[in-house]
Length: 193
Image 1 (cartoon, rainbow, N blue to C red):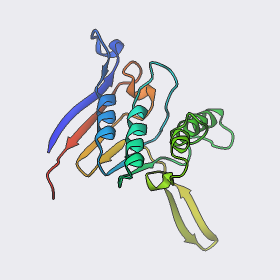
Image 2: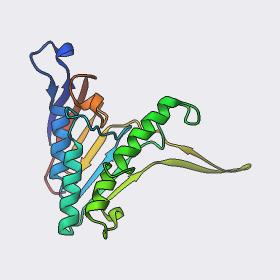
Image 3: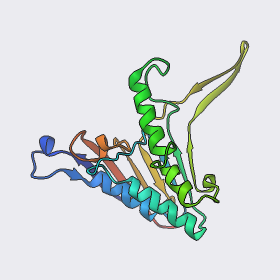
Image 4: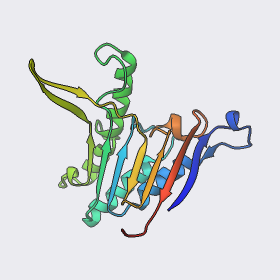
């Protein structure tokens, strides 16, 4: 297997002439080149309308469009927490993050699923992309109990051939290279097992 270190780091942190965005490039490349499936675990999935925004979403949407348009067998499974960490019922911060995520994923014509539904109205998008949350379940004496599993990992697996694991969330803060400093490993092994 080949292993490469990629990162997201700003000039202010690195002391270099330009920002480093190789983590963003690795995510975009893995998504765009996936042939059969993507499996992603992330704490956040937030896009931006800002012109300077990270353009990883521009890799996901075209890859899904290609699969749908050609009728390919392709599936993207994205696992997120049910809600951000914090007091869901009364935290404005948690509500704000949820609103950004909903607008990125499924609410409105600018969302990923909104764009795909408008372009492919007769297609069941669940055949191609699913956003999921994990929960625990246990039958207790007092009755059934369930609790959210807080997904905090930052993982992408494409076709069982490429994996990206590290500290970068799928948002501008982690991927633009001028805010948080992040590091990821890209592990690639295309040999058939």
